[in-house]
Length: 264
Image 1 (tube, rainbow, N blue to C red):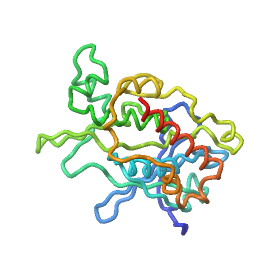
Image 2 (cartoon, rainbow, N blue to C red):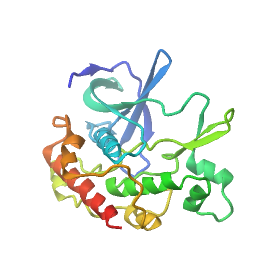
Image 3 (cartoon, rainbow, N blue to C red):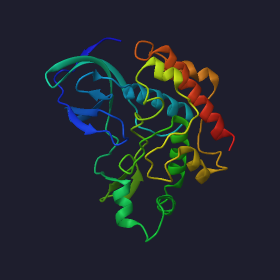
Image 4 (cartoon, rainbow, N blue to C red):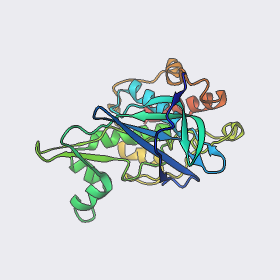
């Protein structure tokens, strides 16, 4: 992969809401009216860029393509970036804007706060709004990838007042998933890919496994199927970006959890 020079980008700090240490940095550019959004992996002011969340975005992007799930697509970039006067060579990911002309966005938690009935659960509210298929698919995906950070702002409602339309944004922001807590090969080696970990979910509870009870019996959520042959598709071109032990453990995680979902 050819390295790019993105040292001109200005990065803003977005604190992790998943309880992990460090900072996630974001930036954007606009060329001929087209916006592009950039994300870095977990950044430590002393150690530099220590995470691999951007690689997770690419893996999940490919997984959702295989499963036929609408989602925001990400591009993997290897580049020099400048942060607080220091230059780092790193992988990052870039995406376009999923809003259409005339649309405004609102976080689902804010939309719920304004429009929900008294005592209505987050899940029941989404069903009443006509979002059930989307939410059920999201629950299945978040279990498969062990998404730790599906808070209410990581689900967005897109409204077009002129067209009187409303829709849910394509699934996005999957960096805090898979083996995001592992920063070394030793940690990856010890990681139990089927173990449940507390997650920050707006829908359901804090367990992605327990949330599967909300969709039990739904076998129609994915248009595609995952097979062992898809391992090569998920990890193609990532040899220099991710150690082999991460590749193998992440595949075991995705495929093992996918089989659990299929057995419901």
